[in-house]
Amino acid sequence: MEKIDLYEIAIDKPFAQVKKIFLDTRQWEKWWGGAVKKASWRVGGHIVWETGAESTITVFHSANDTLAVAIEGTFTTAKFILQQRRSNQNQTIFSLKESAQNGAGFSDGGAAHRAQLEQIITRFGALCESTANGKKKFLFF
Figure (cartoon, rainbow, N blue to C red):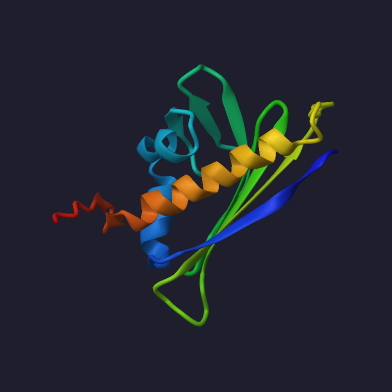
């Protein structure tokens, strides 16, 4: 199995708000790049993508200050961890680790895919920080 690096950012929003955005399937197209038709957020549940493809949720652990989710597709498994920063309750750490499977590989050693994952995690952080209580913030100058 070819490993991909771990990506992590600090988001200046409380854990509950970040978790709500993560679990809102209407938001996924904005940061992940693929539209979700529906998701069953539980172990053994599925994500049905707008393309018709399905991914399986192999890990789903939700607690007061942590959310861990692993989503297995045909060629990759994406592992997400959202965790409230212990020293700052208004900040959430978002981690993404993705690994290839079933013979999937990268002709460039994964460089282009790593760049894509960096963009994904950056978009998620920007979406969370531009949203207040689950609603988009509008800034007026």
